[in-house]
Image (cartoon, rainbow, N blue to C red; front, side, top):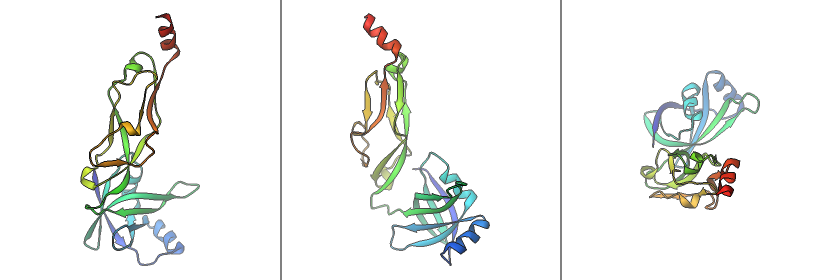
Length: 189
């Protein structure tokens, strides 16, 4: 899994008034939880935006007071009008315990049905999986070369060693609809 390093600082005061002042200084309040201890921290907003506004999923190595903590982004709260990131929740990763993360889906190949004129619909862009850190790939790769008209790939069809799919097994990830030209072609035959 890809990783990125950020340096943060401990947050002394926790509250609405202090948070507003912190954001004016270009910092974003965040909390790290999931380990033995909870940390209230400040992160540089511009550097952290690179982690938030990307389709990739990163392991974030945060250095606070000389101590490095491996985390993963769990949630971000945004301003309702301006969409500015107000606060982030980070989960501390323990390399011996499985954790849940949302990974992007990447399609590989060209579908038979698309070559014949069908329309491929990708219904899910990310999958929630659970596993150990060393088992997590950068993305979930799905080969679509054998997908033809009327076929679908469901979550239960996707297998990765060491990973457990969290989303409902019957959810459709990708399906292929026949176009009008394809149905006319089949009726002529």
